[in-house]
Length: 205
Image 1 (spheres, rainbow, N blue to C red):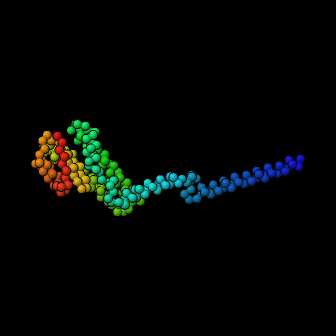
Image 2 (cartoon, helix red, strand yellow):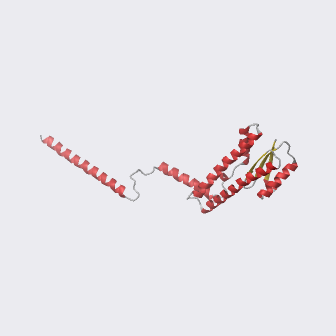
Image 3 (cartoon, rainbow, N blue to C red):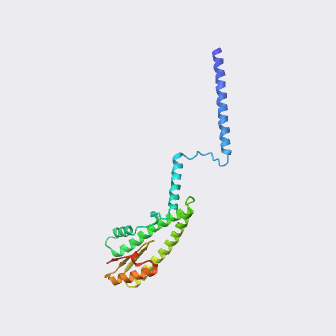
């Protein structure tokens, strides 16, 4: 009987310890919830924090460089992609060329907008991105105008791609002479203010 009494006391003691432990845990949890900004949710893990810091750092890096290669588009890649998609159809080539040009321009504009909106980007980087966005808008309008002007001169089709240091002009014509190249080059030079050596004219028959 004495052994049973000892066990009963131990059980009561254990129950009391567990009760106090649960109460302490609940009180501590309520205090954490009452803290400013407390949500009761688990904090971000190291992997998630590292991913977010990496993304922010990449955007800030892009915004701090005004000569980022990602801002520019390679004209030869657009030409190659359009030729591969269009096959031998000349009319289809110009459609594909414009689609590919506009698609890459959209990506370029999206990148620039991210830099402008990025709080981690430098002031200089944001200003450069804003200026580039304005330039792109003006270039896109000028491309459309030049294409219409070239076609109005009697050529079957034309596509123009203006870049910071170069202008690519693709012209569809049954016959294309040096005089044609001079007339188109002069038109593009006067319209864009670019020197003739920056203008490349590619005829397609």
